[in-house]
Each structure stands twice: as C-alpha cells, then as structure tokens.
Length: 411
Ligand code: CUA
Image (cartoon, rainbow, N blue to C red; front, side):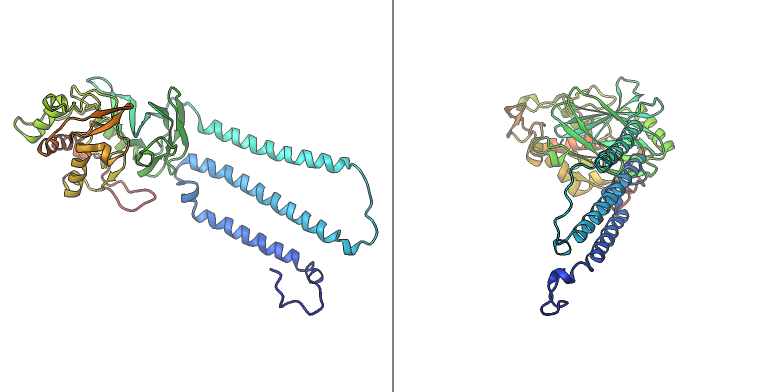
C-alpha cells in the first residue's frame, strides 16, 4: 500500500502516512462489505436453498452473527487506528500519564461482550427450539444409515402384507409440509446432509435424532453422507424427491397398495425371481432375499437396501450411478452398470457388503468370504426381475421433477 512514488525525497513514510490511513481503512471496509454482499447472490451454495424454512432460519441467524461481527470489527479497527495515531511517540515528548484501573472502562469491556454473547445465545436457542420440534402433524420419515446406503421408511404408510412403505436411497417428501426425520445408524457413525433441504445431523448407532425440515419447491435434491464412515463414504449418496402434497399422497397410496408383480412363467423375470429368492446353492450363490426386502414377496431381508421399487428408482449403488429417464434401466450403459453391480458389487464399490457372484472373495463382517458363482445370463435374469419392480406409471415420482441445484428434469 505504501508505495514509494508518492513520497517526496527526504520526507519520511511516517509523515505521509497518518492522513491517509483512515481512508485506507474505509476503502478496506467498503471492499469487505462488497464481498459480503456478494455472498448473498450465492446463498444457494453457502446456506442452501431458501425454499426450506430450515435454511431461512439459519440465514436469519447468520445475518445477525455476521452483522455483529462486522460492527465489532469496524469498532475495534477504528479504536485501534485512532489510538495509534493519536498517541504516536513523535507527537508526545513527555512521558504519558500513569494510572492504574479505570472502573468505567472495565465495566464496559465486560458488559458489552456479555450482552452480545447473550443475544446470540438467545437467537441460537430460539432457532434450535424452532428446528427440533415434535409436532404430530408432520410427515414421519425413519431414516437408517448403513455402510454404505440409506433406507427411508414411512411409519404412517402401513402395507397390507406387513411392514411399512420403505425405499432405499431415495427419500420422498411432500412440499409445504413439515417432515420429521428420525435418524439412526445400523453400524458406524454417518452424517445425513441434504444442504438444500436443510439440517446436517450425525447418524449414531442406538441414538435416534428427530428434526423437522420442509421445502416449498418440488424437485430432486442431492443428499450425501457427511461423516467419514469407511471405504465408500464418498459413495454414500441419496436423493430427496419433494412432491406437491397431492402427488406425494398419490405416490404413497400407490406404494402402500403395491405388490411386486408375479413374473410370467418361463420368462427371464421368472428365472430371476427364482435366483433372487433362493440363490443357487450348487455354486454357493446366496439368495438376494436374505438381505433385501421386496414388498409383496417373501423377501424380507433388512441388512441391505429395500428393493421394492427398484425399477422406479433412477439411482444405483447409493448414487454411484444415476439417470434421468424413465427407460434408464434398459439403456445399454445402465444395463452394463447393473450387470457389473450384481456380478461383483465390492469391486465396483469398495467396502460393499454384498457378496460377489463372480466366484471371487471379499471381506464381509471382518471375514474373507468367497461369493458364489452366477453366469452372465443368470445375472441378466436377476436384472430383468429387478427392472420389473416398478410402481405404477403415474406413481413414478421422478417424472417431471426438476433437479434442484443442478440441471435437467426427470422424464
Ligand atoms: Cu456414511 Cu460417510
């Protein structure tokens, strides 16, 4: 800042400085406020989508905290520069007055920070009370985090054959309504984080956390695991699909009434169903039903994601692969991804606890486990069965849903 060209020869820096410093300070403050105001246009990145009242609440609190910080910064800077300028050594030849203690100053220096801290504490407690309610009207979603996937269950949507509507890695919620998320983990600590919906919470085994979120904007929101949880922490993603209330109700009704289709005898789906339910004992290939649930079938496993609506989903492997069209599973690239997934999921996704079906071994529950063997044709039969697990066309919750914070619309 102090360049030489505005200094006349023989004139010391110190003399040219004092008059200019306050202006530099003001310029700095102006630049700072410009930068701060620049954040507002990017708030969807920094504080999440403002269609969420959770994010609006956090923004309100942040504005207070930032405003107070700016005021304190400016006040301290002004006081500092004023003091340094006024009490320069060269302006005072005599020794400064010596005194000890200044009651008024000391009281001010204690009381003012206490007031500021108390004010911010009251704001924080108020926001916490608003964001952690337990209202009975809210839509309940029970969320279970596992290495490395998510299950979302709807306790209010009982299924006739037993259990409740459950979906793996794709959470549904209505717009304009409070949604109470109950979060827990089945193994290690994970983190639930869908920034544009609001709220980041740790998923801790044996602990249940409840908080409410909402959004006014229908669409597909990205969710991630925010707590380092193992080899595929980065492959532990999910989607939150927010639907208009009528559509949400219709989808949930369709999901409640859903019974997995019975494949036509002799079809690829029927062969896949057989393998899914019973595996292939002759080659050591264990059944899928031991770990996965499919609504309306005997498959009731809970150690893997619920596969009831697998064909309606647009994500595979907890967001490792995703598509935006309804015909996605038939596309060659998607079919290849699904085939590879079924063949050797631990190869595609490190740490996946699904057995390998290519005869290779992987570590499951700390033990090296040799998977069984299925032929490529058999894997394709299972894929055909999985593809057939679809909600009715009108209950395709992806259709027409815009991607929030990204590009594209589900088709
Ligand atoms: Cu689960 Cu990171």
